[in-house]
Structures are given as C-alpha cells and as structure tokens.
Amino acid sequence: MSEQNNNDLVASLMSALPQPVLLVDDSGIVTAANSAALDLFGARIQGAPLRAHLRQPEVTAMLEHALSGADGGQANFTATGVAVETIWQVTARRMAGRGLVISLRDVSDIEAASAQRRDFVANVSHELRSPLTVLAGFIETLQGPAGDDPTARAEFLGIMSDQAARMTGLVADLLSLSRVEAVAKIRPRAPVAVDAVLHATLAALRPRITAAGMEVVCDLPPDLPQVPGDHDQLVQVFSNLIENAVKYGSSGGRVEIDARVFADMHGFDGPVLQVNVRDFGEGIDPVYIPRLTERFYRVDKGRARDSGGTGLGLAIVKHIMSRHRGRLVIESSVGAGVRAGVILPVR
Ligand SMILES: Nc1ncnc2c1ncn2[C@@H]1O[C@H](COP(=O)(O)OP(=O)(O)OP(=O)(O)O)[C@@H](O)[C@H]1O
Ligand SMILES: [Mg+2]
Figure 1: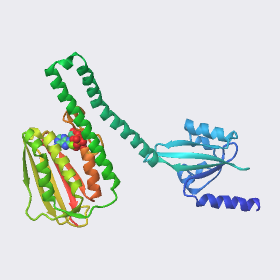
Figure 2: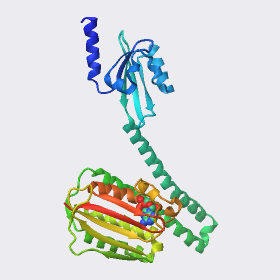
Figure 3: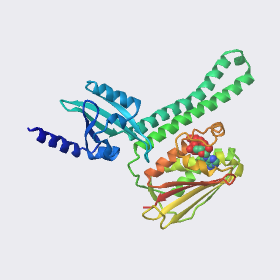
C-alpha cells in the first residue's frame, strides 16, 4: 500500500472512532486528531505539543515515558473548568514508525461509582464501629469489679442491649436497601390496597406511638383505589415515614395521615394517589431537605443517632418509590413540622 493510501486509511479509521484519538510524533507534536479530539481540545491542537494540553503531572510523566521509547502507558486526566468535571483515561500506545496513538476514554461515571462505593463502606464501618466500641467498653467494665454490683450491671446491660439493637437495625436497613436495589428495574404490579397497608403499619407501630405519647389521626376516604405495587415495600415506606414523624415530631404531640386521588399531576401520565404523613414537631430547615434521601444523611447527627437513626430510612423510601414510578415529596420549615408525601401512580 502506498504511503498516501496508508495515511488515508489511518485518517478514516480515526474518524470512525467515537472517542478522542490523536497521533503524536516522537517529539510529542500532534500530527493528527479525529473530530472528537478536536471538539475536546480545539483546532489549535494540530501541530502543537500534546503535553501543553494535558498539563497534569501524572499524564505528563506518562507521556514523557512513552515518548522516550516505552511501549505505552495510561494515566487519568481531570478536565476542570468545563460545565461538568470530566475524568479522562489517557492511553498511549506505540505505533510502528509513526510515534504514539493517544486515545481518551471518559471514565467519570466509573470513578464516581467507585468513590460512592468507598464512601458507603466507610460509612457502614463507621456506623458499626461506634456501637461496637460501646459494647466492648461495657463488657470490659462488667468483667471487672463492676460486674458484682447488681445496679451497675442492670444499667450497663440496658445500654448494651440498646447498642445491639442499633446494630441490628442498621443491618436490617442495609439488607432492605440491597434487596430494593436488586429489583430496582422491575416495576411491581400486584394490586395493593393502601388503606390496608396503612392500618397494618399503624398496628405494628402502635407500641412505639404509645411510648412516645403521640396520637395518630388517619383520615382516609372510603373509596381509595388500589395501586400496582409491592405490598411489603409499601409497608416499609409508610413505616419509615410514620416512624420519623413519631421519632422527630414528638414535640408536636400528633401525626396526621391523609390520602387523596388526583386525576392528573405534573410528571405523571394518569391518575395518582397521594398519601401524606404529617407531624407538628420541630421540622427541618428547607436547605437540608434535598439531602434527606442520601444514605446515612441525618440533619442533626447527634440527636438523630441518640434516637437510634442511621439515616437510611428515607434513602430506602426513595428507592422504593422510584421502583414504583412514584415520588416522595418532603415539605417543612423550622418549627412547623414535616409533611412527607408519597405519590403513587394508580394504573
Ligand atoms: N419528621 C421529621 N422531622 C424532623 N426531622 C426529620 C423528620 N424525618 C426525618 N428527619 C431528619 O432526616 C434524617 C434522615 O431521616 P431517615 O429516616 O432517612 O434516617 P433516620 O431516621 O436517621 O434513620 P433510620 O430511618 O435509618 O432509622 C433524620 O436523621 C432526621 O434528622
Ligand atoms: Mg427514619
């Protein structure tokens, strides 16, 4: 094949590739760039030294190493100053007699997912470590002279049992989160009677409601339609919401639950059922509301933890709602309690 044909072939190969690809000669000057590369670096990249455009120590070192005769290399380049920060994986490969082929791959999503995984593991470990530390401390105390004091023993065992319950709760939350995620893409379709779900949930929570000295008023219209859903998951949604209202809204003394059908609502195709759980406690500053559904997020870490919260409840609710093609709406202002609304498509 002639040199000209060869060049044409290389050029058409490069233009057929969706990701940015460049050729550089042995001195690091760009001799060719496909259109994705031109979009990324601008037309000025042609004939310019590539290192001037990928000015980050890791990438520069990799390029120098490759230019000095190595087979190739790989390094990440973080493009800042653009609308969304992008992480490019830059790969250099030697091409016989032609210098280097440089290709870039957008690995932002992969990097973000692994950062999320790291955070998640760190959070779980942290949440488990504090009750474990308490347990270990009291075990040690009970093994000492305090073990012979019946009053101290009873008190310590009470604390230990609370901490064990907290760990059990955390593990149960984590398991249900992963169960919901496992079936996240499958929309549940069994007909569910929401009024029955609410009454069953309230019955199960009754002891806690009584212990908190709260009154729950459940005002449901008689002709509530069934919704396609997953019965157990909807029980979980309402338990989490009512539990929060009882736990954090106890100063308001009462919780109100109401439900209503809307023939249409923005963002939905057909009729929807909205169920609101409302308390009259301290409420939440609206600036924190967007973060409530993040895993492990608590508005007031200390206080929520004292009441046994791990910050997973609303994350689970959000996942279940998205599986049901529904929505969770939280409204609040400081001192005015919280209204948590669940919107479910009726068909
Ligand atoms: N009704 C409410 N009133 C005031 N604050 C609330 C209310 N509901 C939730 N919050 C705040 O939102 C945070 C997140 O709630 P979420 O249900 O996700 O977690 P949690 O209750 O802390 O723990 P978990 O539900 O896993 O036991 C809570 O820690 C609390 O700070
Ligand atoms: Mg909760």
